[in-house]
Length: 434
Image (cartoon, rainbow, N blue to C red):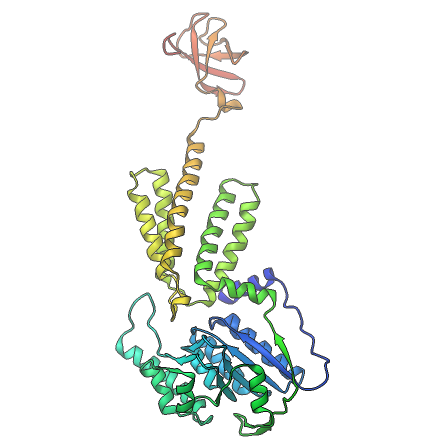
C-alpha cells in the first residue's frame, strides 16, 4: 500500500525533468547542496547528483553539508552511494556556523575527502528514542551496536580513527572542526570551495575500492546541481508539521464535498492535500497510536455536533487531537517531529470547524422540507366542502381532493397529515391551534 501511495503521489506531482550534461571545456566540479534533514527525498537528490556527475565525467563532487540529522535508512542510502560513486566525493561542512550532526556525522566520514569550515561542528550521533515512548535498554544497545558496526565498516578503511568516532555514537560526543581534524576524522579545515580547489588540486585520493585517483581540479568550473521542483515540494511536505496540516485539511475538504456534492473545489483540494500527506507519512516513521488518536479526536467532534454535551466531547476531541499530533511521527530529531505550536494552532480551529459543519448537516436533515409534495405535510388550510369520505380543501391557494377520518364541516380549519397521490388526508384543528 505504501508503494502505491508513493507512486500515485509522484504521478500527481509530475515527471522528473531531465538534466542535460554540461558541454563546457575543462574540468567540472559538481556541487550538491545538502542543507536539509536527512530523509528519502534528500537521499534521492544526492543519488541523482552523484549519477549526474558520473554522466558528465566530472572531476569531483563537492557535497556542502548542513544538517541536524535525520532518518537512519536514508543516511545509509547516502553513505552507500558515496562509497560506490565512480567520481571522487568531497563532503564539506560549511560555511561557518552550520553543523553535520547525527546522521550528518556518518555522511561526512564516508567521503573521499572529509572537510569542515572553521566554526562548524559534527558528532552527537547517538540514536534517539522516539517521542512515542522510551526504548528499553536491550533494544537501545542493539541499535547502538548496529550503527557503530556500520560506522566501523567504512571509517576503518578510510583510516579515520574508528575508536574515537564511535564515541560520537555511544556517548553523543560532538567535535568542532579543529577537534575533528586533530582526532583524524577529517582531512582539512577549509573556508570555501575555491580554497578546497587550491589546496587539493593534484592530490592523490585513495578510493574505497583501494584504487587511487589524482584530483585535476585546477581552474575547474563549479556546476551547481539543484533539486527540481518536484523534489523541493516533496522535501517541504516531509516536514511533519506541514504533513499533519495537509492531512487534516484533506479530510476536512473531502468531508465538505461528501456532505455537499457538487462543490468540487473542496473535494479537489482535499484529495490533493490528503494524497500529499499520505505520501509524507508513508516515508516518515509514523506512529499508529498517533493516527488512532487523531481519528478519535475527529470522531468526538462529530458526536459533539450531533449530541451536545456542553463542550465535554469537544474538549476530549481537542485533547485527543493534540496527543495524536504529538505522537504522530517518531522522529529521531526535533525537526522530524510535530511541534507543540503546530498542534495547538490547528486542533482548536479544526475542532470548531468540524463541529460547525456537522451541525449544519444535522440541522438540514432534521428540518422539514418546505418545497414539493413533502412540504404539504403539516400545512393548514380551509375545508371548501364538507369532508368525510371525500371533499375539497384549499391549501396554499390550491384546491385538493381530501378525506378525513372524522366529519369536518365546510369552512373549518384543517391540517394536512398525509398525501395519497393527488388526494390528501386532513384533520380538524381549532382556530387557536391553527
